[in-house]
Amino acid sequence: MSRADRHFSASADDHNRSANLSIHEVSDPARRIVLRGGLGALAGGLFAPWLAGCASPGGGAAALGFTAVPPSTADALRLPPGYAAEVLARWGDPVGLAAGMPSFREDAGNSAAEQALQFGMHHDGMQFYPLGDGSDHGLLAINHEYTDDGLLHPDGLAPWTADKVKKAQAAVGLSVCELRLQGGRWQLVRPSRYARRTTMATPFAIGGPAAGHPLMRTAADPQGRTVLGTMANCASGRTPWGTYLSGEENFHFLFGGGDNPTADQRRWGLVRTAWYRWAEHDERFDVRRHPNEFHRFGWVVELDPMDPTSTPVKRTALGRAMHEGAWVAVTRDGRAVVYSGEDAAFEYLYKFVSRDRIRPGGAKPNADLLDHGTLYVARFDGDGSGRWLPLVHGQGPLTAANGFADQGEVVIKTRQASDLLGATKMDRPEWLAIDPRSGEVYCTLTNNDRRGAPGQLGVDAANPRANNTMGHVIRWKDDGDFDGRSLRWNHLVLAGDAQQPRPEARGNIKGDAFACPDGLAFDPAGRLWICTDVGPRALNQGEMAALGNNQLLACDVASGEVRRFLTGPAGCEITGPAFTPDGRTLFINIQHPGETAGERNDPLQPRRVSNWPDFSPTGRPRSATVAIRRRDGGVVGS
Image (cartoon, rainbow, N blue to C red; front, side, top):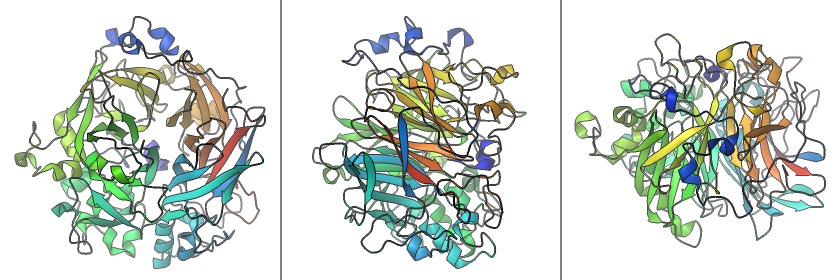
């Protein structure tokens, strides 16, 4: 999720040049209600008809029961009194494959082959899968978003070699590890029959309407049905049938050869100079030589963590986008509904409704469930209502005359199809979370500094800040059921520091201030957890100075209170919140500690921003998974 030049520059993600109205342009200030006190403030308001009969048996979500921590700029993980954290899985630690468990070298001297047996770089989305009926033994599925090649190699970026490309390609993808709680502490089980790594050399099947499509065929894969690898993976979701979903986000950064991009490639953000230099030593990432390889990324991938021999699948029916992740709800008649957004300025929110019902028996009976159904894109209207617009070939403008020969081309060109339908441009929709009590879907809109800039879309009451550096959280409920074609929406919170001198930057947070909401998750008791991702160019600078390092906060959606639970090490992003079923362990990922404004560390730099978590004078900062528990064994957050 973290891209320094993405957070406060249009160059990386402002590719939507369509004339569609933004959420700001369709909102009627007289009819908007901006939340300040959670659901209690909505009595008689827009949400009231939806929530009748939706309260949980226990009387609603549990309240916050911990002492808030203050903002911090320390290179440390700070927790409330009574809590403890332990680092479980660092970049470079062995995953637990029986084939080998190479130790991490402090000088980053591990080979590409060794890296393929170790946790990748920059952990992000994560899910916990119990083994058995309890909460003390299970699997963690983790994705690895991107690489900092200045840290990944002993001598950094220069000289750039084929071996460095191979190691970078081994440091992305997915990891599955086994862990067990013993004596109040989590320990990785190594070796483990469940342990797994996918890298850019791992075959992924292609499912859904784009499987075999002419735009998916390459010289290496003339059938268009198998892709090597997944990369740029960001947030994640867990399906009711026990699989792991991960979104391929900023895949365009990995492709080179964009000196004269096509209109399609420009719409997908291909830039003249690639951020990563894979194409120099791996020709499949040169769009001049293999233009269709570009179409084979940007999908939601599905992996069965319980079966390390299974082939993961790219689910093309869910649409191609710079997916942050994917989150699953279930209709009353048992069908799956998958919500997703893409982390880019002025892009869209989607949902997919499966054709078939979820079958009992786990992953295998549902192996093709996400290959058949209907994809929609969201339009938010100014009266608090909205519509889900079907992205279906032959309906409306999605015809061959407009460049869509079939449904495969619709899903490959999801952005262009959404442009034609008039979907609502959003301010970087990132993680989503579905409240199991109310059925409301929450989404973080991290920021968009292009909002209101010259030549860009303006502001209104629904998103009332030009140069929206602070972000906000929106929520909606589909009418009738999760497969409803209409919805009602409102904001949970506008992020920001109320003490800011710039009025348009002030938030409406009830409780502890924060900016740039990103990760999002409900715990088993109904508390909403919010991760922040202030980019390195803004972190602890200017209007962000009072907020300190990135943090994890808990929100009581019944009262609207937000309370700071954790602050992270210097330069990091907090991400990947996941809970055990009993709510007594919270797993989080500390991503890219020590990140610099240019996102390229120099291995010879004598003084780094961070050296967490090892603090070795000769070591390097390492992304890592952390387990957090109450010292008395109680429920986290209570």
